[in-house]
Image (cartoon, rainbow over all chains, first blue to last red):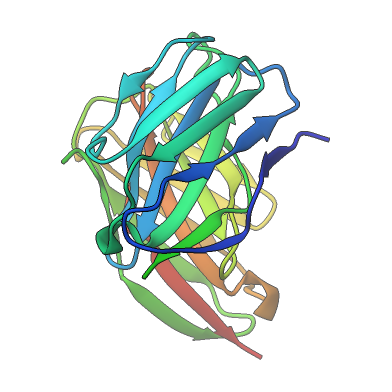
Length: 114
Length: 109
């Protein structure tokens, strides 16, 4: 069974802290995505990656960076967390760039920045 | 933003009734997908309809697509309390997925 695992379901951090959100998929998928989800705004794409060490900005990359050192792992980094980054963060993967199939999501990481 | 929009934002029906939700999107697509999200959880894929298809069925789900109007609809027939969730459409351009804002469905037993 396919699986996308996000390391933390709930996190509470203070303003200015560095935050790491980890995502691992076990399906050998090439594509990985980070979204944030806020009420009334739906899902917004932060960053995505089509290959190891490759990244592309989504719609709202400001204040975030990502790392993909291994195919199965895609990390989202908040260099200096701010209260407006309080949100639900969702990681997803899909098979490959030429495959227009479905996204597989993790369970989400709910981040609160105080 | 290239997000789509779902309509209605919220829908409340009795168990056994049908639920219809609509989605509009902004760009040309390869396919359109519908996802379900239970409260506080990740999204789960329900059904995919390709840009050259007009209608697709899967169990109690029926999806239609009108590319000329850039719109899609999801029909859930004979709804159950367990169908209570948020439903999102996602337009797939081949490079990215663009999600709508979701419809919150409540099915009353």
